[in-house]
Image (cartoon, rainbow, N blue to C red; front, top):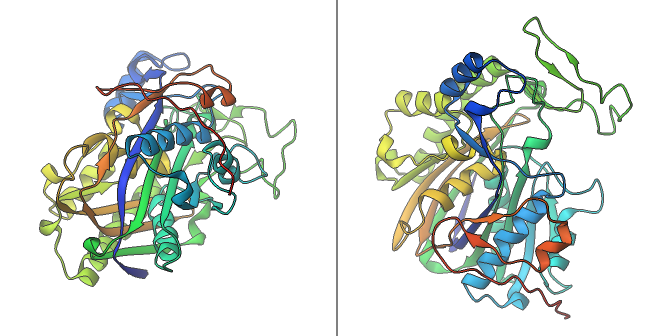
Length: 384
């Protein structure tokens, strides 16, 4: 357990983007019987998800969210000194996706940009990195861009994962200001459990071959996937979560010298409905303080915590609020945070139309899901 403390650093604005294509899980019956689908959907609590098409990448969702954030808050792009892109579904093996986003967003060439490749806990990991760098005193504004298209890496014929994952992107603006007070972020890892959630092939230890791309039956239930599609050992993940997550939350609260009752909101990683309900019951948490989006967006991996904030806490973070944030996932890694929010401006979530080439996002408007005016995304390139 490593708990980091920060002072006078906070998130001042957030925006989110999702693909326009809605997948209704109860109708996701191409490979399974309606009875089996109903059983799985009701167990995990996921009824809708958003799927990007083959032309839409994580970077496109983050680009739309970042443009919305910049335009809604009238941000001078020349004041953005740092961009961190969080994803395990990057555009390319190389270059880093953050570099292409720096260019697409029209940021100056002296803007620091790099990627963080981590799983579902990555937003809190990314926050710790960005908060540390902003604490140096030489960075005025920083962007955290967190995007995933996990629908592309899990097999539609494997019922253990076929109904869980969705796609989304979020942008968060981080700045220095004494009003934020103290933040606490706990970061943890256990590589002995690396095989609990994994895509075995397609990297450099098990490189892609014609065989790794072939789907095959992988168990007695007839589930199918290739070695380049993700898998989870669900029972082992659940046992890990109920043991480690409550303990980490308690340690983080104790370090910050606060209680869960003092939190205004408690935001969990949206893994599945059963896990989150179990943790809340075990820790005797006030369920009215726990927003959730899993039923309409599914598990969006590292994006799920910030997406839940953008979706469910829009208009609720005026004044000073304190959030308890908790996430876990691939690695295994897990993280908890006690994070002050002060007058955080949250934009309406925007839908990104599927079927457009990536470069088309430079010229399209984005229409909020609920209310708000259309925003132009004209992107003149700025030079130093």
